[in-house]
Every structure is written in C-alpha cells, then in structure tokens.
Image (cartoon, rainbow, N blue to C red):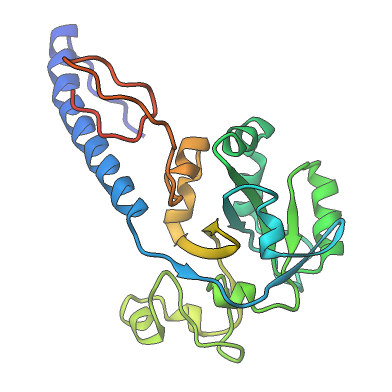
Length: 246
C-alpha cells in the first residue's frame, strides 16, 4: 500500500483546511438526516411476540425494562449453527457496560435477539464472557417480521426494504436461494402502554452502532440533550442534537 505524499507544513495545512470544509458539510448533512429520522412516522406493534431469556419467557414490552425506548441488535445465529456469525460477534465484543449505562440514562434499553434456542445463546455467551442481555426468538415470527431471517417457505423475502424483484435487479438474488440470517438493528418506542416500531436499519446501515450517540441517533427521541439557544455565537454542547453552525 502506498503512503501519502510528503509535503511541507504549509501545503499540508492548505489540504487539511480544504478537507475540513468537506467534513463540516458531512456533519451538517448527518445532523439534518438524524433530525429527519426522528420525524419519521411509526407503526404500532399489535402482534404478541414472546422471547426466552435466562429468567424465562418475556414479551416485547418486558424488554423495555422500564425504559421508554428499546434498541434491538439482531444477531445472526441460525438454529443449526453452533456459534453466532463472526461479524456480529466482533460487534458485540465492542459493546461495553458503560455504553449501555449511557443509553439507559437516556431512557433507552439495549438487547440482543437471535433466532436460535436459548441454550445455544447461553453456551456462546458464556464462551465469550459477555454480560449483555441476549434473548431467543426461536419459534416466533419476530425475525421474519423484521426481515433478518429470510426464508421464502416461511414468508416473502424482503431485505433492506427490497422485495424479491428488487433484490434480483440489484444483483442480490442470492438472498432468494435459500434460508439465511442477516444483521440489523431495530428501534421501538412505548407510549401509554402501546409499542411502536420507529426504525430499522440493515446491511451496512447496521454498522453505525458505534458509541451511545450513534445508537441514540437511530431512535425516535434522539440524544435528548436539551439546551437553551443563547444570544451571540458560542460553542454548542458536544453531542447536542441541533446542527452545528460553525
């Protein structure tokens, strides 16, 4: 791999300032996108999903664990497999108790869900020494309804909001060849006893988990950092929802 060109400090500064302008443009575009995401409509969940965890059977409402929002990482783990997929494993390795604590401070719970029996989940969780809450959706429609378990014999295949014909046109017809597990992240909101699906992202979109702000940016309530617009130009708080203007 070739290395970057060696230049003088003055030349580097010119190039860096030009690139900074592009970085600011991307930041503003990302902030606007995050704001539009929070304004997306939502769909009420009316199906009674049941999951299995170490403490027994739980409902989707139980997974909120007293929080107003729920973020689910769909972990690829087919019932026929002995381990979760390597990519999902790597992403869970990068989770931390601190991240989950920060999410809960914003009234948001985070859980893992896979379509494999709980015994396999518990064995693999112990092997990886993960303390995170991981539930089994085995035997339910949950994975199929949220399009992370694909099997034409069970339900029409849809992935990343593309149906069978669109997948063929995009050169992704391999998703139609047989059952498969796919990665994704789904967000839910509860209000007065009702549960709503607000957002799901798949493929490379599910790579945006990052830190707690990256997760919160996918939710309907966002980062929930209120601040008062002052008079005059000042630095806005780090991580604030409104778009930076400098």
